[in-house]
Length: 102
Image (cartoon, rainbow, N blue to C red; front, side, top):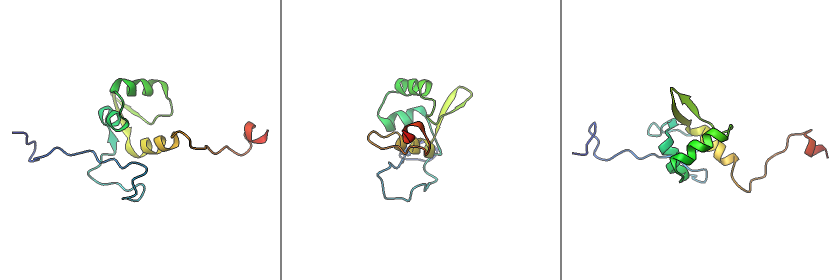
């Protein structure tokens, strides 16, 4: 009862947050999936799956793979994208851009 393939407890998703300093950046463990499901990303971001689907439809820079109607999120690229889109972070301006010249 409750045991699948010899497991007594479900495997937990272990996604390090940008502020987690316990592992070197980019370190990957075999227990951590390279691609996350919609449910996993929604739980990570604490939003509904419906909200996540809306973000996928409206945010072209969000890293997502569409495979036969199924969405998967590359874990490392998603974490990097989230870090780049944090509120309050100053973005570097490209040298020679209109706002940098003015």
